[in-house]
Image (cartoon, rainbow, N blue to C red; front, side, top):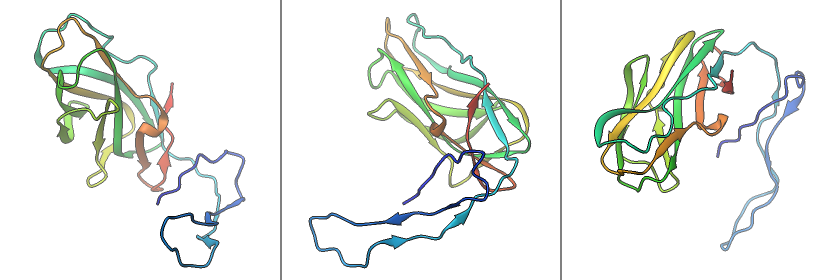
Length: 185
């Protein structure tokens, strides 16, 4: 179980912790409750920053012909203060294409493929690039992050991909090892 939270900038010096108060189950559960984890002091630090541009390319397109290596999503991220490790990225397909019309998704940072190809988006429309086994270091400055894929079918239909919320990207400050909250510039 992982517990994550956005901590208010004015919370320095506060103590946080997690406890499991009780369990409801269809089978017998043994143990003494509450079960408490360690308590942690909140400190302030200047973490790395990840800020995405408010414009994403390409726009929805309904006149696409089947083709390979089509840029399906691209954005410029400004990485500030220090490098980050990219651990995962989830992009959501929005549009009228059918399952199987788009395949073979690949993620690139500054023109270099990172991680493995993802064959197809999931039942919820997400393409997830899981890089936790080999996080990718992204150095400071403006960095072009893009996803390409193959258009197999879907003539007359449309699609676009979207980074929906900050939790759909996991980036960790290289020096502090703490997750960074992605923002929109």
